[in-house]
Length: 352
Length: 235
Image (cartoon, rainbow over all chains, first blue to last red; front, side, top):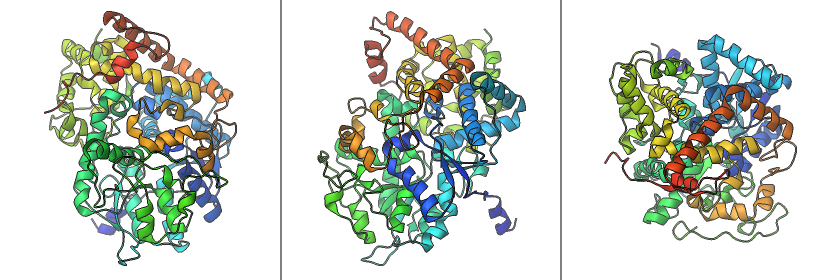
């Protein structure tokens, strides 16, 4: 097949405007600024309409994949989100969470294969809530949308992902959430084989993407394998396998599009450092892990402390210095009015 | 009970298993197979043989609880099967029959129900800062402790709407929305599964002489959360 035609099969149509925004449970807890920055970039930098609905709830995804929520229940909760989208007069959903994105896609696929299941869920939803719904025209993960807008962001950018001292592109490791690309490859940019969603952003904004052997290995969330204390060895072992594999390539930062992956790859570096004294950078400070909104915010010139980089366990000053981003250390741990907050305890190993 | 017929009632089972050729690529790609003594290919083989006794053994086993549901197997199966979907169907049936309480890993479903499960109906979120306490999550580190200790001012700093009405990050989900969620759980078998997990766990707690209460402040909860026999590794 003509390579150009072949690549077309890996593309997806990504709506950038008039979006119903579905938030992520994990991101609201651990990356609260990222969702705000997404909305701010979309609305105020790119001039798009995104509806942030107070009425939507969790999709139940973490409970579902930990097997305490039945599939009928999860499908009906998702149908309720579709009903809220319909009520708002919208047709396209922008999903902040990769687990939710995978589930929304799975549910639609299931209903396509088994139309009787769709009718069953319509009945459940109506009986439970008197609600009806339209099937969304499209479901995009918010990283798809950021990928789609990467050129506009590059045009408006204040910084490039270039090491200001050497003039070389920063070396980035990208990690894509399993439920983004592995479940329904035809619904993602580049499919499961060549996912471009994060690589495209990094390259558009001046950085260099590093390939490494365990690039596509799971971060190790594993749902019940993290949620239950006794199982967390599974979770950290998977991340450790990735860190060891990427270490020789000396990445400047890790970029992820999945809420869990971003949190685990940050926190497991802390845990491994404390337990084994091992870090995966040359200075013993860890490799900073960013969300794609944080990265977009940095190149657009947002204040790093407005992006919430200070609530990552692996600190980011080294990366900011490499790019040449200015920041005020006194405002790192301050409230919204700039008043100082008590300082956090320092870890024994990952000290900035 | 004919377990294969019960499994076939689960749409994920019908979607996930057509005809397996036992090539083993699912096991080769599986992160859980690398960490645990776990072989999804073998599970599919057992299920495909439709031997009721063997399927019952699976429902009582540790092995069905190892999968991390990354779904890497879905990408790679040359026959379009999804062993992860079959595992989901097996776990559901194991919980409906009460077999989950027979295994160390299966018993952990009680811990998940008491935390994430109940949190969904209480707050409208799977995860909430109140749930990620430093004693249960020491791996979250000192920055997370700092976030929790200063939660109002920290979340406000990042434009959140913590525990308040209206739109925004970590907003308080309005009671009318929680009521709709509860009604969906009641209508679709969600509450029934919670009750099954609770009922069979209480029985198991009694068998193990461990205290069991309505809240998770009990010895059975602490046991299932933290006990690891060390008999699960692939090494």
